[in-house]
Amino acid sequence: MNEILFDIIFALVIGIVIAIIASVKSTRTKALIYSLPIPMTLALIATGGHVNTSHIIGLFLVTLFLWFVTYLKSKGAHIVVADIIAAIAYIGAGYLMITYTHIPFFVAFAVYVILWLLFISFYREKKFKESRKKVAKVSPLIKFPIVSIVAFVLLNLKSLLSGVIVTFPFSGVFAVIETQNMLRTLSATFARNSLGMLIFFTTIYLADDLGLVAKLIIGWAVYLVALKLITTFVTFRTPRLTN
Image 1 (cartoon, rainbow, N blue to C red):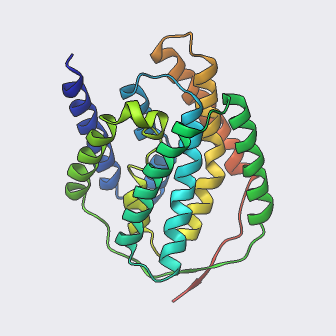
Image 2 (tube, rainbow, N blue to C red):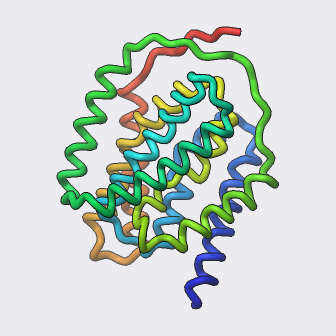
């Protein structure tokens, strides 16, 4: 298949998936779907299905993306402006890190785990406030073309961005807008659950000799078990809601 046509098809598929997620009405179901690495899996397939250090770098950067948006919003930036700045910073930092750093996979894995443990030990007892105000949701009809275009552009840059494409926050760029009054909760929850994604990538890395379908199935199975353990044993304080 022509490479450009392949990228177009996968970009459209990613856009469709994000639109479907957005159309789900149940909050509980939506939260469950958002916790699954569905867009990441599609992007992983589109980029060849192989995992390397760049995927861990991307996972670290997408966590920083959420916290950067949170910071900019707290300083008075409009949420859309904060979103765009953080997305551009994600891509720029990703390119620089995978171009000028050469870290062995398991060294990056160990560093990520250490940073994760430090974050959890610092944050799990932290008290904070969030707003109970609701904000308008972005229509799936808007999400589909935007995500598809962004996905197509990034897939065409896969030789430069490598695994950073896989972890790009295709759903996160809208999640921060729709949860702009609960950004701290969103950022902390993703940071906690990101250990499951690290295990997901590591499983696929170790199973690289297997076929694509087999290693994705194994990766998902291990991820779901890891996510269940993480959400059961690592909890945060419930934020105090204000008007």
